[in-house]
View 1 (cartoon, rainbow, N blue to C red):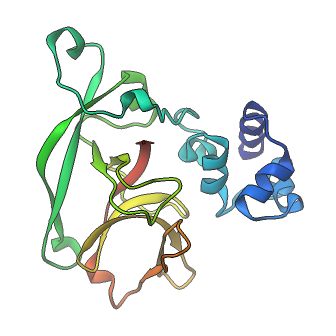
View 2 (tube, rainbow, N blue to C red):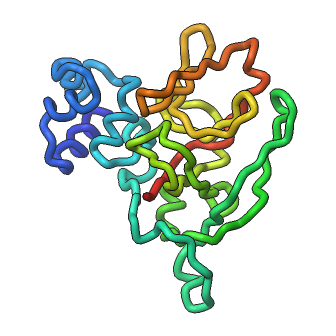
Length: 223
């Protein structure tokens, strides 16, 4: 259950309820309701996961692994050699480009492979991804700082395009590829949120949604 995962993660991180609450901008009472089970869902769960250093998808669903595997040792793309090839799954570091269109006609392509990064097979298994459905892109700009900084490597799952409220996605919107935290609104619109407060939110509505497409969900980062 969510309350149990929260307790375990917080204690493993050696944080108090007050520290978690203050870090994500809510009251200790509000956070306590999550750990007691009085509330079993919250848009703050991704922020809690980031603060505690755990995988957000695991926190929300209990599936996969709590480990974020944000290791600096895996940051630099390397050349695959025969003696290492079979020990890891090697994920492509790519550059994405987009073809013009609307809605389902928006297509993205990986034009260049700039190396590979090794991952233990268990990492992919825990997150239900394969070397075909996971790609790594390089973040540009500081709109998602301090969680994702300029130049960070970001792993995305191309198979996860259904929006989970509060999760981070690579998306295409209004002629631009970007990485944003996505929130669902009651009226069906989507908020593309930047963690850096100096950037304004972008709103995807029914009117401009033809210029929007989810590329994949962020499942890993290193930088």
